[in-house]
Image 1 (cartoon, rainbow, N blue to C red):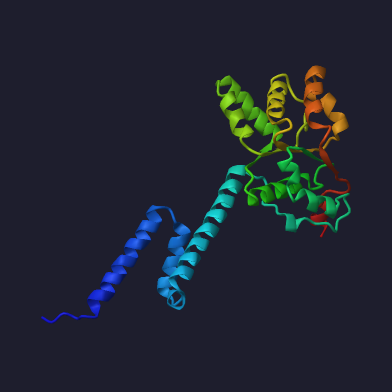
Image 2 (cartoon, one colour):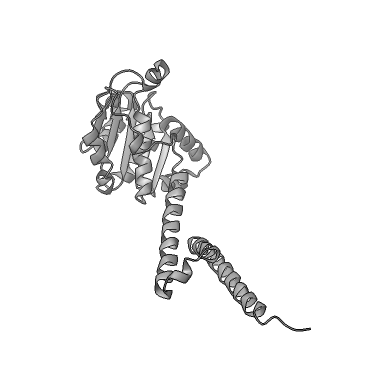
Length: 258
């Protein structure tokens, strides 16, 4: 039986391409593998020099890893809202300054280890703004953690009972940006005060906190409860913090009217 001389070389090339794809995937070069697979289905590779083709594969791998890193940071941050800077509504009168938000969106305050307070009544968009800045931080490769303050402190109290508080605090400390949402919604109890102080002490002048609260900073002293602990906490977070003071009707109420 005669052998088709054209079939054997084509088959060998196909086998070699599959081996290359398998190796890329085994080395977790998924972006490169995807680009290589697309090139096999089209004519892109034929119109490129070997150097240009290699450059294209490397660029696709770099982009894939960058997007995967952003997705991982966003997933680990556990945001309450899928909020983004471009979705912020500046048309509603609530004391929000676009120029200030654009300056904050550069994340310079995070790189400098300073804090941000977002205060205002319920529904004015405090959590949304905090999550939007958090998503922006993830896009810039900044490790971020979001937590409802009451739930986070409650979980840390349980961790203390289980003798694993230090490990949990280390996880928080590793994040360059911490978002404490709805802090001081209720006064701190005797077990929460030292835990919050530990968190703030670990981050003082090194890593940033975004705090949202219905109460202005002037009321936080009483919400801490213990004068000594209150002095220690506020002295470490207040003096160099940026502030956004929101006012007006609830955004949820306004949307319901529309």
